[in-house]
Image (tube, rainbow, N blue to C red):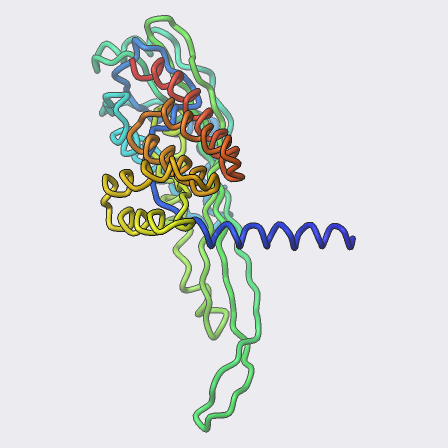
Length: 345
């Protein structure tokens, strides 16, 4: 136990020292999709198949009453899920999206997948809407749980004295189960069948239990909000998406590194790069290694990943201890680029 505590203390100390010599900046990178959709699929129709058939309709109504979410909450949540996916796909350069009107597709209305759509029905949807594939939300179910708690808080009274009073906490945990299928009309093949869960939490507090609970959203609204979030999440599975990442760089080690950090904070990357480039030849290997590390960041920002990897390797050869982690990140991004080439043809 003593050795373990010592190890944790050293880890925290190293992290603290690293934070003193480094700072961070944000980059946007294009993340490949988890699933590579065939190249010929460029235009897609998103359809809702979560409305219950006659066999499941009564069960769906009863569940809405007893769950407290209300009748039709899952229906609205599924519609928001479709909206979330459509909105997210609009942010990616991969697809053109259509949402057909007037379709009345029935499913189970639960988390259970129905039988797949028939290929004549899939082809009819594709022909009528001039699309290459159908993305169907085929299963949808919500579950919510309320949690209550209390804790003492210190308040200052009118006379300046302090006392402890109870503060009441309320939280609503929402969980959605969604089932998706993508139908490739040309090859008559289901290219993705995926069940996922989306979670969202809502918290509130108050002087009474009633005040705490009144600060929470209605369960119906929580289902809709979480449904939109679930649609957004599925987009990351099937489409390349721009994401924000954080990258560290050295701000200390020499006057030029300090000045360059100032330029980066002001968005003046060209002047920062000029100083880093100069310091890569510094006689002090520590300073040179840090400058090479920062040049790797500059190259990644410009999309020159192979050049970035070269600079990171030079940083490592100069003995920089942070470079191995960055080398691993860059190798991962280079591998992602190969996947993106297939996904963005």
